[in-house]
Image 1 (cartoon, rainbow, N blue to C red):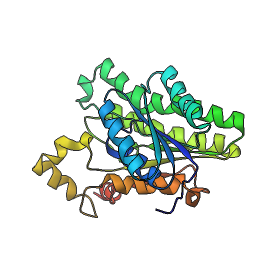
Image 2 (image 1 turned 30 degrees about the vertical axis):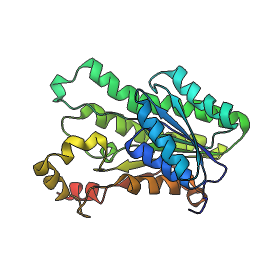
Image 3 (image 1 turned 60 degrees about the vertical axis):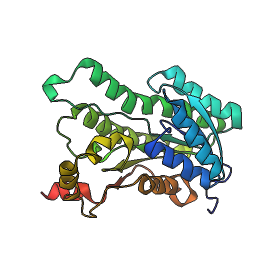
Length: 257
C-alpha cells in the first residue's frame, strides 16, 4: 500500500460487515485510523477492527445508533477524544425493507428513512460542526445506491431515502465547499454483501439481474472501497457534488430498455 491516507482519521458508520467493512480495511491499509461503528453486532465490528489492524492501520469500535442524534454526536466526539481529529466521514449505515406500496407501514417507512437519510444528515452535521470550528477541510462520502436515480418496485421508501440523499449531497457540496469540505455519493448497484444474500441464493433472479449488467457480474465490496479511497485521498481533492455509480453499467442499460 502507498499510504495515501497516512495520518488521517475516518469514521465509517455501519462498518461491521459488507461495504463498510471493506472501506475500513482499505482505508487502514492506506495508513488511516478508522472508527468502526456498529449498532448491535459487536462481533462484526471486532472482525473489522482486527482486519483493519492486520492491514496496517489503527482502529477502534464504537457502538451507536445513527438514528439518534446523541449517538451521532458521540461517534464524532469519540474520534476526537481518542485521536484528536477526524478527517473523513463515510455514511454507510443503511437498511432496506421491501413491500408493495399499499402495504408499507409507518414503522417500516420511518425505519428506512431514519437510518438511510436522517442518520447521514445528522452524522454529517456533527462532523462538519467540528471541522468548521477547527477551520479544517474534510471529506464526506455517502454510500447511496443506484436507486437514488433508478426505480426499484416494492422498495419505494428506500428509493425515496436514496433520492433525498442525492439532493442532500448536492446541496452540501455547494454549502460546504467554501470550508474546504467535499461531499460525494457512491451509488453501488448489485454488490455481493450480506444485504443481498437472498438474491445471491436465488439463481433465477440472479441470472435475470446479471443479464442487465453490461459488465456481466455482481459488484464486489472492493469495487466500492476503491472508489471510496479515491474520494478520500488527495486524488479526489477537486471532486465534489457528484455521484459515482459503481454498478457495472446497470443504470445505463436500465434506461435504454
